[in-house]
Image 1 (cartoon, rainbow over the protein chains, first blue to last red):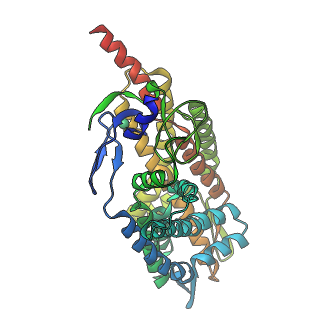
Image 2 (image 1 turned 90 degrees about the vertical axis):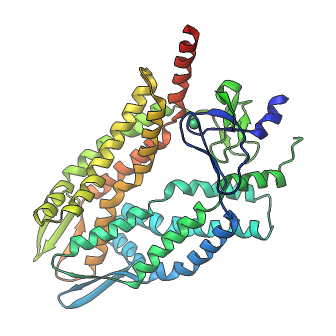
Image 3 (image 1 turned 30 degrees about the vertical axis):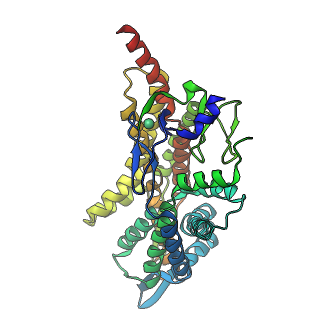
Length: 211
Length: 214
Ligand SMILES: [Zn+2]
């Protein structure tokens, strides 16, 4: 039964499996693995509050970022512009379902879900409204971590503007500005969340030790 | 912080991949006592899956480069360009930074990623003169590289959408865009299937042998 007690005070490196005594960190401190150098545990500063405010900022930027035109082109003295949603619709009309789906997933769906997820989590922790279902929610939330393709998408916009530079007049619209900010806030809202702190707290609240 | 100088696996423990809680392994799969997710102490059939997805990625990379990724219509005449010829056009126009960015994202990154994963799989299998810290870093890099190859796909997608609203010129995406997307998805799954701890499992054996001799 010694082992069961021990697991509370042990951490293992996720890259090389080395075992360590659980370090006691202050906010802002990071423990690194001696063997492979990857980050073992990180205590983030003011995690819940920061995530809460980033996610509020993101929710405000959500509608303008997706609905306002991000790119405008002047072709033959006619001005055309497209918002992010327009792009998805045009691609579906053209029959490129896979690309349309990916664009929708990576540029709209995933950041939106991440943002509202971060908001819900930080809200529950900030105002102490924790429910046991939070265990499942937080676990599901972390599946989204692998889906951050957004900076690539931004670079794609820049490059495509260069591609059109030749015989067209391109303009950047307000939508691109709000969309960029929206992506930043969405990313910040989830990276400021302190995983270990949240899991520790959930464990103390909802999981009895005698089981 | 003190190191216990052993690994979780040697102590019958395993790290939950979701919530990073160390669990005592009593069954395989083991249910995590904290987040209730099921997991194996090592990713199952990691090497086989990595290899299979990697080969799939390599295969789809061929049509991705042979077929046109973009077709530009002007005055009714279609001008098809593959990834490489598109890069050539940028060089011709003197837009070198963009040419370099697209070449890196669309050609170098996927190839480096596929080659790197083959190398890691090979190293796990042979374990000859293994330097796991170097290879762990390689794995970190490969993981990070994942999405950057999507650049060209996004560029074409945006061009199609924006220009479609125009009248004179029109741009269509070519079949290569689908194959290229598949390449990116396959390499990402391949990297995700690889378990870097397998590299270190080999290392322990080497270390023990080394200590035994001393
Ligand atoms: Zn390590």
